[in-house]
Length: 197
View 1 (tube, rainbow, N blue to C red):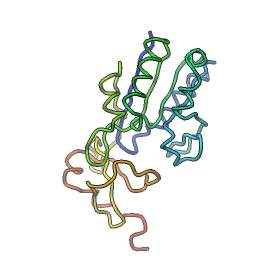
View 2: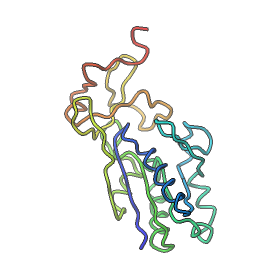
View 3: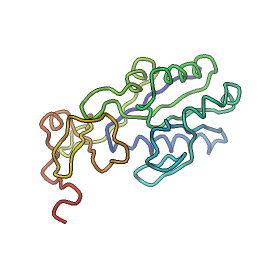
View 4: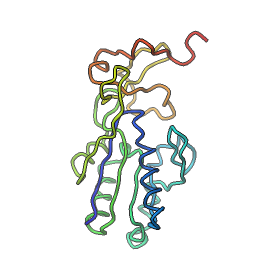
């Protein structure tokens, strides 16, 4: 039976690299996958998924996948969704339909919370609806597990106010453990890019 998976992690935990590796593993075994992301995320170019370590692959946008129709989607061994935190609840329910009614496994990768420590709409819906929930782990500067996403400004100050989504600013985020996120502590060796240049 197909299942809905939500694999979440803090910034820098290699979620996108994991998504691209899952796609590769399916296709290496001759099983076609569909790589999808919300159109909101165009940081890596039009119709492209790119990991920080340099892996890339073309994708379709979520609304384009929906327009394909159920019969066309049934040819895929798996649907893989990157940046799933940007989905709406209704879009997550569509993924549930693909799993339950069409028997298509769906693997979603994304952030659980934003820089304020609040759930994204898509993440909330996935935490409620997913059959399997798995954390993709990374570490804080102190060596503890990073579970929070800190946004910082040019001076290296941690921000906890502002718009939930700021795309194209990967160099303004870092994963921290709860203690250091609460303390607004980016670490003794942290130097904002451009400082002192």
